[in-house]
Length: 70
Image (cartoon, rainbow, N blue to C red; front, top):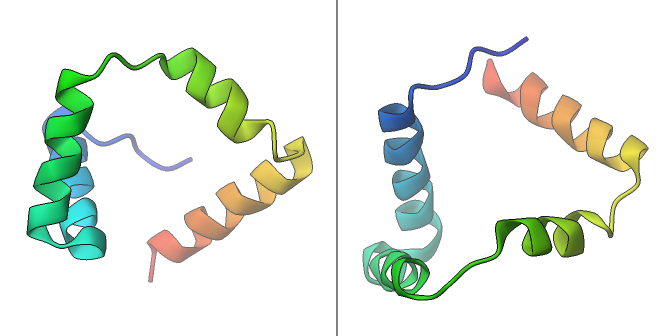
């Protein structure tokens, strides 16, 4: 099983991923938006993951895990 990142490392990698994908300006805009708007994670999780079967989720996890060593 993959080792969990320390919170500081997780935060740094997440911000870096946002900046790489969106660019620094849009990443900062997103972070500001998230910090000022109420967010119901449980509701989002149910809505987001409802589109996947357990098998599809497991496949995505396997794909992600196999790509980590690259």
